[in-house]
Image (tube, rainbow, N blue to C red; front, side):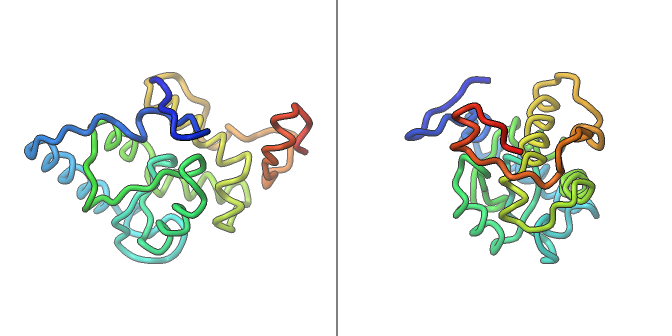
Length: 172
């Protein structure tokens, strides 16, 4: 999987996948998304108690409501890439990412790491680790147990300061 450059950001191509414009393909993708949204674990927004979310964060493979989608968009595509499950076109790779992820896995992962606040959640080391694990899973690579990926001696709600990370300094 290559990178696509948008300004100063380099994003995995899955986020802007080659969604075919063929209507039959899109109908199939929408039907698969609808089935995923109907799963009990996906019936609530990942970030709030809103029911039947019809937006998604592809970065984390989870469904979110329209209000939370707006908040995600304000964080920037380098943190979370958002797409409508109804209005946008989807590639098979993107739908598979949603299938491999899901709100249940993401919710359990963030809860285990003590992360509740939405803005802190997506800037945390745990979020970066979750995304890496989901990326590997989507590529068919072996992944660590979702629940043990963050078992380190570092604090679980550690926020990443990009200026310090660029200088190679300890972010702890």
